[in-house]
Structures are given as C-alpha cells and as structure tokens.
Amino acid sequence: MPLRLFYCERCGHPIRFGASRCGKCHISSPVVNRKPFCWAAGLSLVALAIAGIFFV
Ligand SMILES: [Zn+2]
Image (cartoon, rainbow, N blue to C red; front, side, top):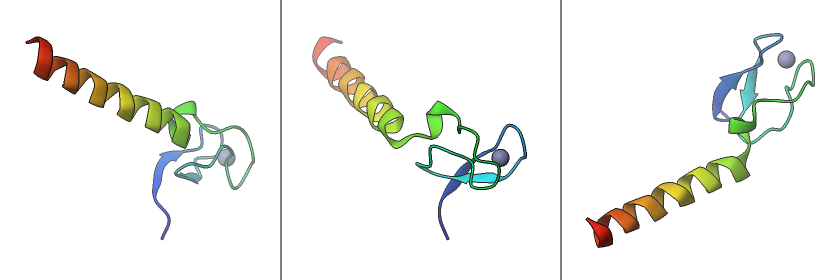
C-alpha cells in the first residue's frame, strides 16, 4: 500500500507521497508532498544537526 500522508484540499482524496497531483481530481498537491521538498527539508535538518555538533 502506498504511503499517503496528505489529503487533497479540494476533494479529500488521500494523495500518494511524492505525487504532484491528486489522483482523483488532478489538482496540484501541497508542495510539502513533493519528494524534492522532503529531501531539501531532510538535508537542511542534517545540516543543522551537523552545525549543532560543531558549533555548540
Ligand atoms: Zn482531489
């Protein structure tokens, strides 16, 4: 079963993680559902953690 973290704002359909559009009504999904966004968020968290280790 695919991972579904977000629901469509318009129709409430669960949107697959990484999908750029709702599978039902095809409007754009929230930008936080995009994989590149998650990679960027993850990378910045890792960078912050590393910065915390070295500079605290
Ligand atoms: Zn929808």
